[in-house]
Length: 236
Image 1 (spheres, one colour):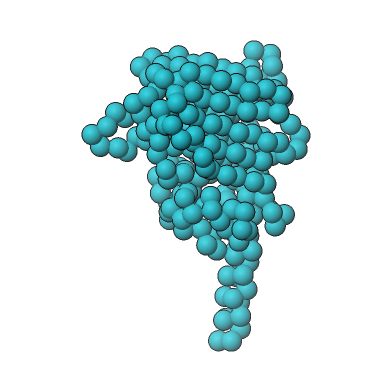
Image 2 (image 1 turned 30 degrees about the vertical axis):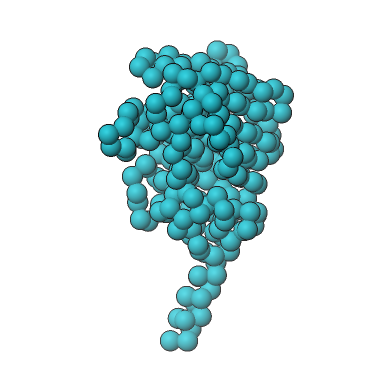
């Protein structure tokens, strides 16, 4: 019996040490998040409800090198599998208080054949008695190749709430290591900050919808990918 107790304590300690929540720098952001894995529907085996991250880790979400919050996902068919944090707060792009996502991250496409998403602004498709379209306003993606441009990061912005019109911004070649990335929305303006440039777009056509931020790995095709966060802040 004593051996079993010791074994359970060791297993608990292992999960606790591999849980991103064990680091102070991630506690605040995880307190306002839920983990969606391997799909958007809650899976008690792999997902976590809002704020329920104490001692939580699994093969899709864990602490690597004792300092990086890590998202990992694979798929061998087109099933749109993901390991993503969905942040609890909803907001409209008309907000006077800036809604900001700041991150320091490393993007690792691994065996992805085409592309995957690692940051999003998405509408809340669960609301009642409010306009709902359940679509992403913004996706930040890695693409293996687009118009003969290889291994670049792209911002894909939906430019109309009613029609499938998109603007695609080349944000440059994927850095080999960690890099800083920031998004801000305020008074119907979208700001995307990179090391090289700041992009500014009017998104007033999206004014009536509620939105939220998402981060992690969202696969758009076959393969595996991983994203490591050295830092992540959601705020004003």
